[in-house]
Length: 399
Ligand SMILES: [Zn+2]
Ligand SMILES: [Zn+2]
Image (cartoon, rainbow, N blue to C red; front, side):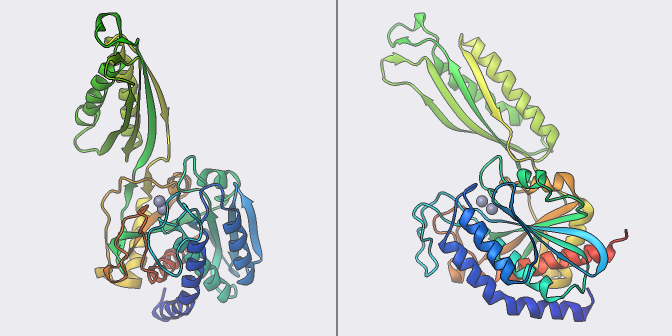
C-alpha cells in the first residue's frame, strides 16, 4: 500500500467504526449458541444487502454466509473470515448492550469479529471495483463447539479457488493497539476423551472379592501424568488434563465403575498422535493390571492452528506498515483451540491476535468470562489489518 492509499483506507475505516460499534452492540444484545445462529445469519445477510453486496450465499454449511466482492482488475481470491456464534454463559456485566438472552452471551468477541468484517464489506463496496481480484468474506457459525462450523463451510465451497485466507481474534489479554503474530504453530490442537473403567464392585470390608475401579482409576491418573513428562520431547509442548473423576456411591461399597474425562492440547500432529497412542496403551495396560477393563473414547477435536511462515511474515509486514513496529510483536503459543486450523490446513494463510484489552473500559476479563468485554476501538485495527494483509497479498500476486 502506498502512503496515500493507506491514509485513505484509514480514513474510510475511521468513518465506518461507529457503525461497526452499533452492529457489535446489536449482536451482543442478541447472541445465539453454536449451530443455532439462524437470526444472526439472517441479520448479517440483511446488513450485507444494505451495504450493496450482490453476491451473497446463505445457508453455507449450516448458518454460514459467504459474501464475494469482485475487483475490476484480475487478481487473487483472498478469503477473510469471522465467526458469529456465542456461548452458554450468563452475562454478569451491566451495560446498555447487555445480552437480552438469559444464559447466552457473546463472551469471546465473535460479535466484534462479525461487525469488523461487515465494516470490511462496506470498505470494499466503497472502492467500486478499484482493486485486484476477489475478496471472499466468510461469516462462519459454530466456532465454539466441535465439530465446528469451518469444515461444513469448506465442504460447501468456502475455499474453492482460494489463494490465501486470513482471520483475526480480538484478544483481551493483549492491550488494545497491539498486534500479535506468530509463524508456524500458534494455537493448540484440542482433543477430548472419556475413559470408563469397568471393575467388580462389592462390600467395602471384603476387597478380596472385588476389582476396585477407584484404585485402578487413581493409578491410571498417575500413569497418565507421565505421558507429557516421559513420552513427549522436552522441546515439544503438550498438555494432558484429567478434569473429571467420577466413581462410587458410599463409604462402605467398593466401586465397580469409574469414569475419567480429560483434554489433550498439542501443537504438532506427530506429538498429538504420540500422546493419543500412549493414552490408549496406558488405559489398556494399567486397567488390566488392576483386574479391570478400561474403555477409551478419544474424540479428535480441532487440529492445531499452524500459520504458513510466508503468510505470517506478510501479515507482520502489513501490521508494521499500518501500526508501526512498536505495536507488533511475536505471540507466545496459545493452548486454546480454533477451527480456523481447518482453513490453514488447505490454503496458505495466517491467523492473528489483535489486542482488545483496556483497563479504563473494564475490558480486563479473559475470554469466556461472564464479565467479558472488549475495547470496541480494536475493531478498527482488526478491519485495517485484514484489509492490509489482503492488499499486500494482492499486490505481490502473480497469476
Ligand atoms: Zn471462544
Ligand atoms: Zn473465539
